[in-house]
Length: 256
Ligand code: NAD
Image (cartoon, rainbow, N blue to C red; front, side):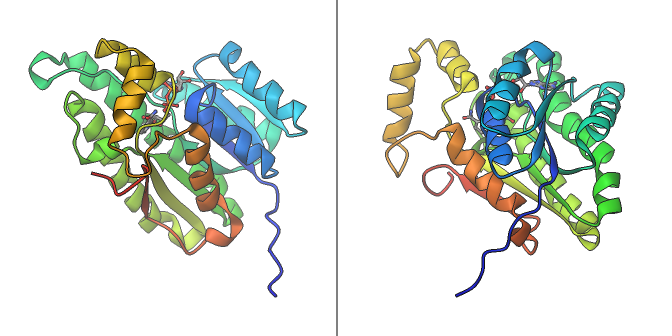
């Protein structure tokens, strides 16, 4: 029988962690023994997640930052280092949608999505990588989406999420020799405020929208934030060091 390896506690930063998938990832990493910087646009929105983690015996701080703001990202990482220690786990999860058909899409809807998903992931990763390299260990997990394969009304978001995949593979190539892995998780339909907003845009109740989507999912249900947190926890694991540059679709079936 093999003895399971124990994962030493690390310091993690999870962006967009005040709610939805990010909150679930933050709670999961804390439950796995890591100290977690719960990063989102403002402190107030993070306090509930921080309190839940603390109530469960974990360690967390709330960090307010816009991931697309270079100075704010530096301050957020500095604060994490000062209060929780060297960050060696980074989950680039913060995201927004600004859906529209191409012919109606405003340039600022395009820019806003690119700024959060791509510029945000770039700035966060650049700010954190030096700590990973210094430690000779790191785990980066970026949130992509099945929309990377194309999705009507999401020309901005699908381009950003496909971009996240290229970004991830290049990180894996550049950082691998320092013990740092980079992978992407690409969720299908997950029940969060983001998908609730999509239902509203389509003029459907969230319940009807979820039921309609579930019919086309091979496992017959939509996903939960915990489904995604489990996949992220796998990539972060101490024993996942030979898995890098991969995109894992977590969509209840083959992504299409
Ligand atoms: P959500 O809207 O519920 O939560 C996103 C969080 O990101 C919010 O707390 C928001 O405040 C934060 N955020 C937005 N812009 C930010 C910024 N500039 N700086 C810091 N924080 C910022 O979304 P979710 O459904 O939990 O999605 C999380 C991630 O998963 C996103 O990257 C999203 O694109 C991706 N995703 C979601 C789904 C889904 O079905 N929900 C599917 C595929 C991919």
